[in-house]
Each structure stands twice: as C-alpha cells, then as structure tokens.
Image 1 (cartoon, rainbow, N blue to C red):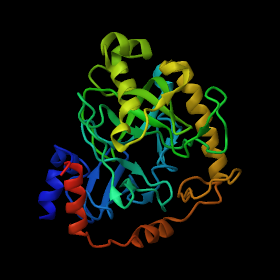
Image 2 (image 1 turned 180 degrees about the vertical axis):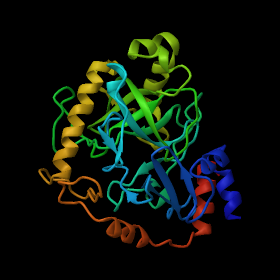
Image 3 (image 1 turned 30 degrees about the vertical axis):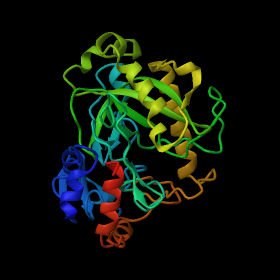
Length: 334
C-alpha cells in the first residue's frame, strides 16, 4: 500500500521518487564526478535523507564543503584544470534539489548536522507544490549554490529587505532533467528578486555547462532570444505558486525585472561573504548547522570520524502509512 501511495503522489510521482536516487532504502548510492550521495530512509517519507560524500568516500556537508566556484584551486583535494577563458572563470557548482516537472519540495536541511537533502515538512505533512496551469511541478531543475547564505539579519541594499536564511536558489534552464543530489557546473545568466513574505529570496537563472545548448547562453538576453516565454513563465510561476495554499501572490523587487549576469555575480559574491561570516562565527546564525569537515579555519570543523558518527546517529523512524494515505488523498483533492 505504501508503495502504491508513493506512486500516486503529485500526478506523476513515480519519476519524482525514482530520481531521488538509484533505489529506495538505506545504503543506496549514486556516483557523480567528485561527489556521491547516500540515501537513508524511504523516499517520499519524512525520514528520508540524502547525504553527501566526497570522492574519497567521506561524509561532507553539501552546504559548506562543496566549493562555490568550479575553478577553485583544489576541490576535494583534486587540483582543478585552469579556466579556459573569462567565462569559465565564472562557473559555479550547483546542487540539484528538485528535478524539473516534479512536485516534491526537496531542500538542503540547513539546520541538521551534515546538511542532507530532505523533503520539506509543513504542519506535519510532506510539502508538494501545486500544479499551476499550464505548468507541471517545478519548471526548471531547481537547487542552490553551496557556500552562500542570505543573512536574515542583513538588509539587502537593492531590495531593502532582509535575507531568507537559506543558500541562494538556482533555476537551471537546460534541456536535461537532472536528479536530486546531482552536483553540476553552471553558467550564471541573470537573477530575479522575489520578495517572499517580506524577505529577499534571490532566484538565479543558470544553465548546465554540459547542456547541448549551453554555448548559446552568456547573459539574460540570450534566454529571451533562445527560450522565448521562459522568463515570463518563471515570473508567473513564482508569483502564483503559493496561492493554492491560501497565500497572496508573491511580489518582486525591480517590478519583476530580471537583472543581468553582472548584477547576479555581485549578489553571489555578497551571499558568499555572508556565508564566510557564518562559518567563522562572526554573525548570528541562529539554528543554522555549520558543521563541516573541510573548512580548515572554521570553529565548526569536525573530523571525518565525527561526521560519520553524526550521520549514523540519524534514526529512521517507521513510516506512518495512515498519515501517508491522508496526505495523498489531501493532495489529490479528495
């Protein structure tokens, strides 16, 4: 029954659940170039967690230990190739949280040790975004840039609003449907300033550098040229996606204007500086968990053994099938 319930979720959730990893259950792994993921718990349940490991098999925090920029001198102890040109000097690592066309709101657990990916829970129920006609789920591969943080105690000069207490979000517009937990290299094209319940919630527009069409895209105007209607759809989606939950339409700074690549890079730089202050304990991080294994001068750094112990301490609570059934019927509008 529980398997059937998971398949019924969100209209086409079989793909959504399968893309969380290679298989359900503790211990399954999926290899990526420099990073691996390890599942704990059952997908589409409140106890599901997706932990990250580096190429040597040690647990890391995707929030803190994966470098922001691709051309870091060293990533996971592996020297990186020299950037080929100016554009490639501005390649960034993106952590995919939500595959395109899926509804489950997956996110980095910023308040948990080692910051695994989990499904967002609200009012005791797993959260799924509604389908806003004519869209199905998220209309891009959605995720975040590591080593960034929108400080809730710092007012953004351009929006006059405080940060939303999360890493900066990314909408990847390439042609491939990616998987939850993938770490990809992206080119930044522009940015949108969403004002979510009075907080600045930046949305970067980016494209996977390995996308077949990536060579066409260099700035925000290229999105208008080669993907006509995509930016308008993005603006409309962010404006309306909370309305089915009984909330008002979202607002935007700059009257909903998408800012260009140069503006976006400055925002990334600012959020990276806020993250540095957070990791050095130079600001109030509140409940944010800053445990890391690779930031040598951070007071929150732990050993590889301590990181493993933290992961192993995660207890898998049994699924409550009756609660799952209630959630599914609620989502289907029954």
